Amino acid sequence: MIAYDRYTEYLSKMIYKTITPAEQQAVEGFCAPRSATAGRSFPRLNLLLNGPWPAAAPRENSRVTFSCHPAVEKRRAPGRRAQIISYTGSLSAALILMFGTSAWATYDCGNPPPGITTIVANTSYVDEHHSIVDPKLAAENAAHVKPLNDFMETVSRAADAYVATKDKSAAQCALVWLNRWAVDGALLGKPVSTRGLQAIYESNGLLAGLSLAYLKVQPEATPVMSSNINQWLTKLALRSVEYIKKNRKGNNHEYWAALGVLVTGVVSDNREFIQISSEVYDDALDSIQDDGTLPKELARGQMAMTYHGFACAPLVIMAEVARKSGMDWYARRDHRLSLLAEKVVTSLNDPAWFEKQTGKKQKSNIGRNLAWLELYRRVTVHPEKIRATLVNRPYYRSTMGGNLTYLAEIDFFAPSANTPKKDQNPQGKSKL
Image 1 (cartoon, rainbow, N blue to C red):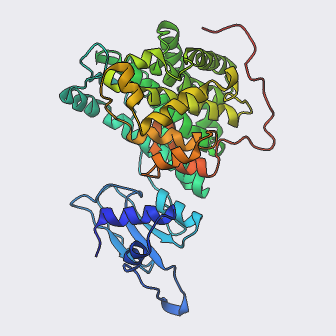
Image 2: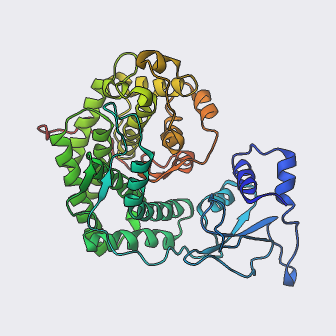
Image 3: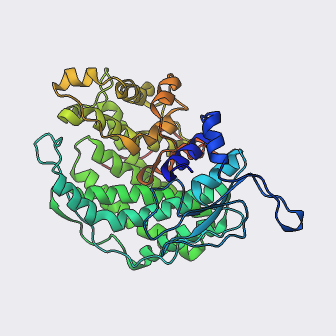
């Protein structure tokens, strides 16, 4: 019997058709074809898993069962949902594996926790270039924001499940959770940063992730939910706007703030928010040098390469959100964003250029932050480089919009046939 982590690795390879015959045989060894009562046949591989896929190895008090029959005893760790999952080799079945839902199970994420009013956070960097992390401070901040990120991830995964399956129970899960925190006034207390401005940065990231999740499930919201959630996101966006106006630093923090403001503007039809984020986006394009770098991120020493990617991420996602609304932001400033994105793509496999410019060996801290490349694959002139880089698919990052591998696969951000083309630069007086 193969190990759990190897098994999920093979399932991922099945989905993306990179599995070898030997690996396929190992997976299928779990479950041979069989028929159930009344002559009913079942797919070749049915899995009863605890928790969403892909996942870390199961906890000690959880059980993972593999079976060929849907009438399987459903045991699960406390607070986790047992799911029956089928694999038939098709994309739709692969999505069931990825999102943890099926025809036999209703999406259930439990009751939402009470809203957390105040964001408490601290920076973990200890040098002037913000490039050296203190592990103790990093752990302290991770503990502060864990319940906030857990909430966002639950909402994001439910929204992804709805997009993949059109299961209304998944949409209701995301909406009920969002509505609960909206009614509770969650996150609206004055952010508390024990070191630096980390709490406001966390607020900006939460707004981006939550508003992107809401963008997916908004069609299923009741009028009351829609009103509550729109008002709540608007209040959070106003905080990000205040940050943007007071801190025109032209770095990744400003871009992340603008992403949340843009998506909130789209879901609430707030033209002022769209205008503000548009101006930040254009300012970012103006900051991109002819060599594809951003001066503020180049000053990050050993983290310069990483932060070029982290700065590019919200800009690419902003361009995608704008595209869904009928605007081509990729084309702005003569496709200036491509200079930055291509610099990042080229440097991921060869950081020598950044090392020469900074005089520092680059410390790669990429991981899930590569998720935006899934969306940029459609635009790049070097798709083969991106394919070679994205070796751990699917890529998921809730602050970037969830499972970007799948969203890119279905071209989620493509405008619908009845989406009118809009002015590329919103009209009106500058809001900044």
